[in-house]
Image (cartoon, rainbow, N blue to C red):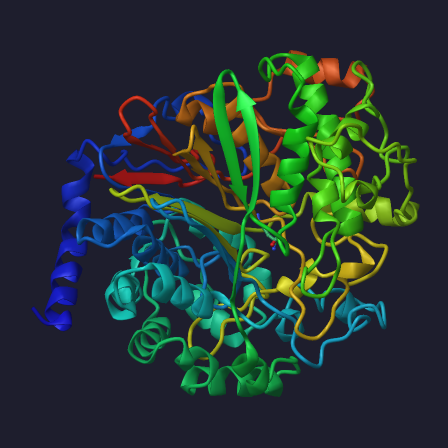
Length: 620
Ligand code: DON
């Protein structure tokens, strides 16, 4: 059978999928929930989707189905993940992408685990103070809107590298569903329609964004078909020519020319120079209720993996009961406060900064931080500063004694910075996570992003949106970024540097076997949402869907406030206030965790989509 004929068969099958799948026992009924807090948790699924062989859970039904189709054709989890990523670039344009970057964590059934870092990098002419030089309106938005906010995209190179190294199929095969979805179009969901309307102001400033995503001025209504022929043509060229197309070929030339013409920084040389990296993931082990757990997570330039290991270490001896128990919530909030203070001080691109990773992951360091937590009342973020992990670089859990180290204080910016943080922390943004497990037990957790919803707002002449990832650098040293995060000097802009990220695809093993595949969008809330999903599964023993549905909470050191979800118990919220916590009165959804658990008894894949948005699990 020729590839062309196989592709045709796949298209035909995909076209029939909507008719076939609703009756399948292994795919959930389509549901849609609004991001803005209107969703009723009473309608959320109470059980995961079970399947014997393979499972894909992503934000979008069409992408999950495309991934499962690849698995059914005999592709492995990496083949399916690459198919899902390209499909999301079409059907979830606010976050799925080829003009951004991300992280793919792969754990093969043979035990090998690797992390594909395809984070964007700063162009060669970028410099530390490029956004801070003037503080007029144009400059203050330059890191979030328009051509100067764009980092050199890594997605195409990263996906191609993952496929070439760990996959079994070829790009044209795994990209076929995405090309078809871009060409034929797909019905706009309630959520996409709402997001397009919310972002119309920014999208409307760029001619091609206006033409493709705003129909030259009118909003896409739910159910209308969104076709993206320019994107389909670009995807076709990438499928045919490989990643070279994006970094050296016609697409690269078009992109560099357009960016240069419009005052951006990226050149053809920046594109040619881009390299994704295969890194070793971070790992940590815990013994819980007689089981051995391994946490495999994202290394820097992600801050999330190390923050989570630090948090799990602090919480290790604490008896967590449930999120109806104020004391358990209190311990987690104080832990979050401390790991976020360390994030602000120490985390950055590991190829440019020396990061005290061993110290941050040390049990001795966790013991020292735990001792700073008052079990009954809230600390303030003015008291709690970053710790001194460097002093624990040589200690580990087997050390006879832990070193005695005095605390360290780092500058946290002035009051106006804290106020700006409060105002900006509520701003939206979007990223997307998906999880895949195949029949052999290979697993992929992938989170990738354009940073803001629809990234920089710019759609290129080749039909894809560009990221605004430059805002993840410390653009104004001492001031918070759009998520209210204070960041370190080590994370200032520099040529070829990767901006610090919170994205943290993570995989858990239980007694040496695959157990949980997880991750989330949400800016800094990624870390809290993913950490909570891990605690729910590993420490509290929740079922996979319960681990996703459980109400979430968030504290990120600065601003000094606690965020709660709409379903968070009121009695616990009042208790937190009595302990001295400033609780943000506005309830909001935190993260969008698309997860797969493994039933330890049957080995079944348990697809647990997040009902806060459009999460969709499809298995077979
Ligand atoms: O890499 C990061 O941490 C951010 N660019 C992610 C942004 C994000 O998750 C926005 N989403 N809700």
